[in-house]
Image 1 (cartoon, one colour):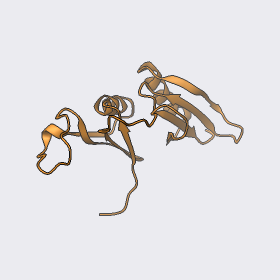
Image 2: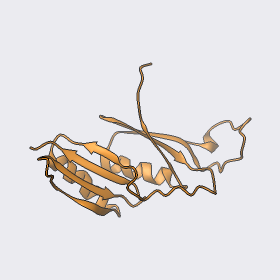
Image 3: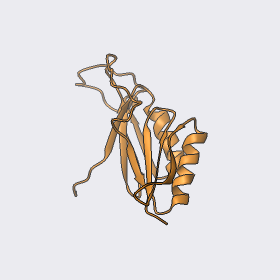
Image 4: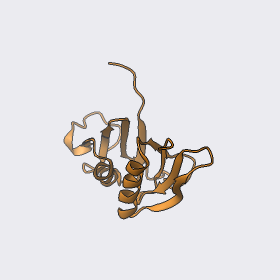
Length: 140
């Protein structure tokens, strides 16, 4: 197996919905494993069988992985600008298509997708789950 790096997001019980939405937006191959689908003997806690233990959305340029946060005391904010997922597309039209799908799915514009001072295209969208998606495209 070769080394790889994936983005991992723990959402507050909305991982399946988010991953299914992102699959509709970006395509790719989606796999979702729920706690009820596996043997739980030896687990240090008793999870909801409907909760997502692990999921992956494999896209041509990378992988988004995630699971439902198990800690009820989880106070990590999902919405914010401390992190984002940066999607670099081949064309500005491809980025616009993804942006429109995220907006149609209940998202909001963080920064309009337009020519940036450095000459490339750049913009930001918060999806309905509070995740910030940054889109970039070289000048085309």
